Length: 331
Length: 292
Image (cartoon, rainbow over all chains, first blue to last red; front, side, top):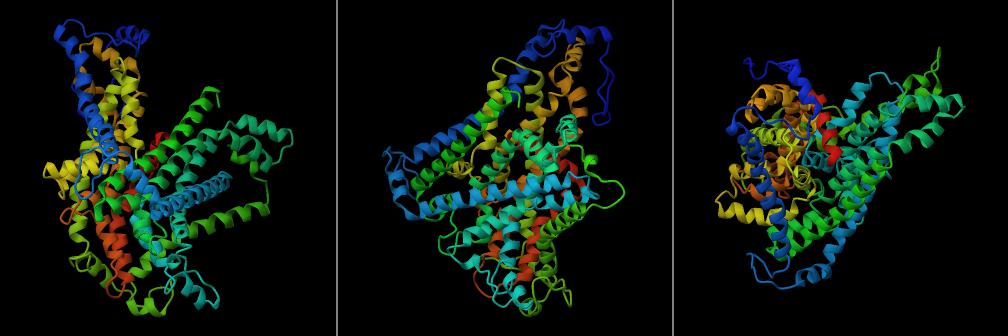
């Protein structure tokens, strides 16, 4: 083999002899041919791949599976400031379910998650369909819709905290414009603060949903649509009856990602409302953080973390099941 | 779908006007916070108090930027964001490079060196993309404490590498399965071994996916808050944590101009990458979205 500089070749080097390429093609993938001649080489080829992968496998066993097991066990102990490894049954879960703040967090996650997903889907899909109408400067518009996704949730939270602040932000602007009755103090209203999280979250993530839907729209088969148009179907009907149903796999990915963002949402709430006023915009991620790290209730924190894991599984498992089932039916 | 179907020849349909209006309005909605952040950051506090959100800065000044960079108080210290910005830089570079390299090797093995159970291994690894990190931070905090890595940049780098590998492996594996097996097998018949094939065939083909992976990992790690706040301590805090402390400081007058300058400073690296290499960023987002 000739020596190729590492980054020079953008195209694959051609197989060295055509004959060799052909033989290999016959039983590709399943069983790669052994290296001829060297027994050491064959042995190396059998074990090197596993050796290369093994640190990752070990890391994943320890840091993902092992740590989940440890957290699960911790949630079954009386641990407070320091971990205590004596089994104590489900007392932490009983305590957790007795804490009103936990239920506030859970309800807030429901409100935030539900509205966040709903608005992102609605806005993202609408914008994608509009952008799909052969729009001039589509690239520039897309870039504008998508840039919030490059920002950290902390930055987004800080920006919206300033815009939504009742004294100087949006409310004052409306007053200056003559709408003196306009009030918008959700940020400091304990009944409404969680909705400000929805506003900022949707601003950050809806463009991304648009990008995914747009990619989906671009892959819809033209001939079906042309046939429908010949039959006299109107554009809304075509989208509603043909195009949107065919986006089913995209819906699954979008739901998966959005649900995931919502459940682990921590930074956005921290920067925007810090869970306040009081604990009114608390979410499980903040509950877990505060009980574990500022209140010294490790056991309780672990129990709340396990509940978060359970929520993720409760959302992901059915979604993935439906998605694979959908795939099997050729959707 | 076929966009040309909707164009009516010769005249501008009223529907098109509605579509363009909507698209532009939404674009303004997405841009408004950036405009507000930028203008606020160069306003004086006086103008902020008397004027309104959308006002143009009357006497632009960079004082707030200077203060955000080197004088603002984030919690107990008043050194501005600069030290934390450099903490983030020191954290993100090794974490991105190492997790991408490991991901590349893993992806190569999973795509071209199939062994019994490789699918199980792949699926098991992917779980790392899905778990909420709250479920691992308590044991991790304990382990970093025992290893004397708590509150250090090294500790944060380690954590980001460990929990980044699932994603980087996914990226590379999905990219490398598109490299024909024939290519790899032909090289093996020629006597090329595992690393030789990686170096001569796979790695030279990998530039685009390395770009995607670098940008994805950079954005994720730079923007991370949870690991930073839990494992960063006082000395290794990344810029996101410092920004949060700055914005949520409740003592004294809130200097919105400083807060906004600080927010932009914290956002600059990822924004710059988005502007320069947006297409790789989007590819990363969509590739990440397929699986999680």
